[in-house]
Amino acid sequence: MRLFRSQHLGTHIRSTVIFLALVLGYFLLRAVPPVGKIFRSAEHGLVVVGTSAGNMMSRVLTSPESTAAQLATCTERLQTVTARESTLRQDLRDVTELEQLLGYVRTNSISAVAARITNRTLPEAGTVTIDRGTVSGIVRGNAVVVGDGQLFGTVIATSENTATVRLVQERASKVPAAIIGTTRTIGLVEGQSGSVLHMEYIPSDATIAEGDVVVTSGLDGGLPPNIVIGLVTSIVHNDTAPFLEALIEPLYDPREWTNVLVRTL
Image (cartoon, rainbow, N blue to C red; front, side, top):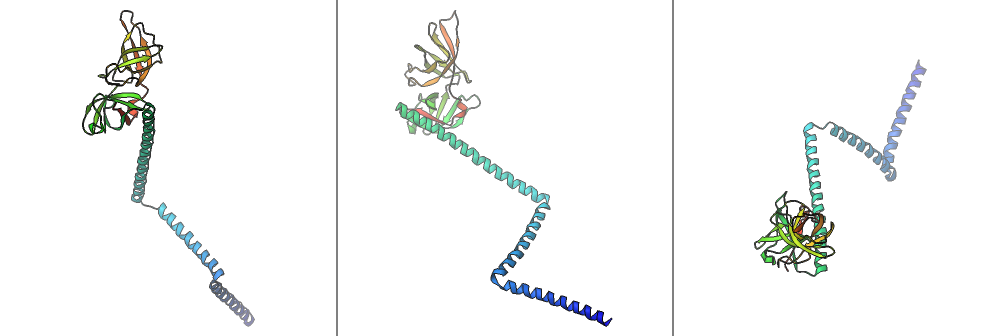
């Protein structure tokens, strides 16, 4: 029995000594800079792992009110991004339109004023308001063009800093025009309050065809000649009438344009 107790006590003492040696060695190793750094990094990693797990659990156990707030924040951010994207798209359209208008001015050496549409009557798009007026040299009767020189409309009213433009598609619009085919054939283009224009008073013996280009004739002394109006899409024959009629399709959609050019001469 005494021998057993001595062995047990010896084992206990050895275990205690080993434990103390390990503890002492641990603190001694921490005191050595290179090794201590390794230990401290390991400890920090354990703390970080524990903290990350705690944060994850916190997010999982988030209250409905907090989730709703986060959703509202995400929705607000999405709306902001969408608005910025829309602004960038409009800026890109502006650049494209202005480049086309500038090219038209340079090619034709004309006097003109660039303007921006600020208001329009939709969906019929009968008239629009632009942000330039008499201060910029704009007067009633000026031709307004878009793109590389297609007729958009005519100025019908002005103020110092704005002007009202009647679109060529508007029913009250009447423009002396000419069809450029094998010969130059004159007529009158009228608006139909839609996308297609109507050309009247075409001589019955005129040689015209679908696809012919229609331009302003300049015969009324108002609009300059040779501004493109559109293309002939259909010809109406009437054996009992002294004139032909034709349907004309403009080369643009007036609803898609924001920047225009007012020809001042």
